[in-house]
Length: 324
Image (cartoon, rainbow, N blue to C red; front, side, top):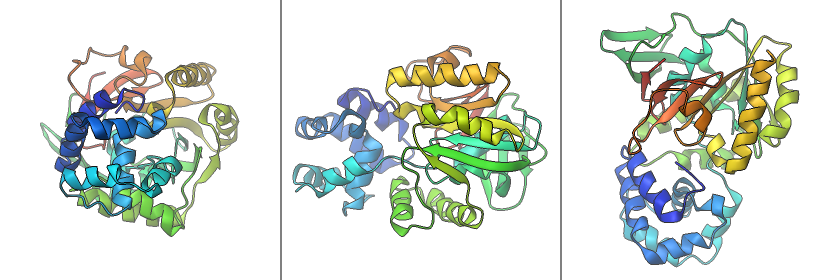
């Protein structure tokens, strides 16, 4: 998803990307063809126009999902201001732990113990790759690591699937507005962000919140570019620093994305950290350009290690095609 795309283009793209949620795919396609709703969405600040946020806010205010588009349309066009206030106050901090199935093969490329530093960490739920099991389904059969519950992922290509869970010594994060796993309102919002028809993700979220509550990470509130150098220095006392992010940099304005790209590459070049990125194919052009060409019509995330593309991934971690 590209949060800064024009409204109709953004919703058409999201209709393709949300193919595994029939409700959201249908809603997004309908919005793109509905001039009145498009006009309403355009009255929001640019970053707040994104489908994930608008749809989650509508659900938060009682729009049923699964449910017909007409209910969504009526809620938006009939809003008295409460729904708009939720959109303005909230962010899409999905925190999908299923992505760990595509991140762990990258994490285990580095010598442990690891000091994991997630930028845009939300509630920090993805900082526990060692607390989950994994089932990578390859053409040669399943590769299983760890205990139940297992995070599933279909794998194509010569992915370096690990034989041991990562050794994590420290967990930290940076977020403009960190969510608190002990706060009922924050955790309810996280649940609302899970797409309709995806009960498995909802079940994982409940467990991930429990995991984070037992061993809270160190999450600081602040801008990810401004806070990153100091947090890398802080993490370095505990092990090999791995800065990572998944579906986060997309929410930075394009000039800020370039600034982040330059900063983290400089930190890698100076030997201060490693970098694992997992973003939509248009978000970090320097990473995407380092791998095989991706067809324009093909929606995918790009997994990078130290600025080099190594795989194409599903946005919620369900599939990975290793290309390195």
